[in-house]
Image (cartoon, rainbow, N blue to C red; front, side, top):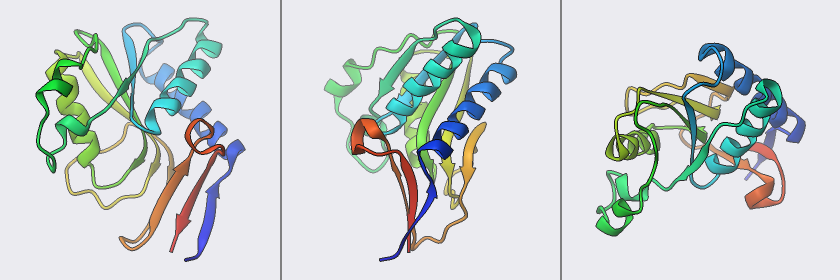
Length: 172
């Protein structure tokens, strides 16, 4: 299987910095913003975005992890998991953060989880990679890199926090 690096650590940092600036600009600051990182790799990316935004704006914004497994349409819901969902989303601008946007099912599950937790003012989506092939009408508001791919290819985001390296690669 042939693997090609699409983004290295510096490329990822540049993409996240651009996304952070776009979030600030689009929302006219950071008031009422809440970042929610979709587990597993969206969580460290959300934390990095929060750090960049704090450096730029001088204010910290809350960041929460989100395990969407209880909300996926291809798995049975677990009531115990639902009880553990504590996100202060009421009247907030929630920015979901994920590593790869593919078919849209994980994002749909994340939106279900947000709506289960309360009524957010708005839900926005930031992804490091958009690879296309949507099965649902979902689009990202902030995209680090568009990577056109075939269904047979695999896009892998690696982050230091989980994989000991920062990179995005595509395998054929």
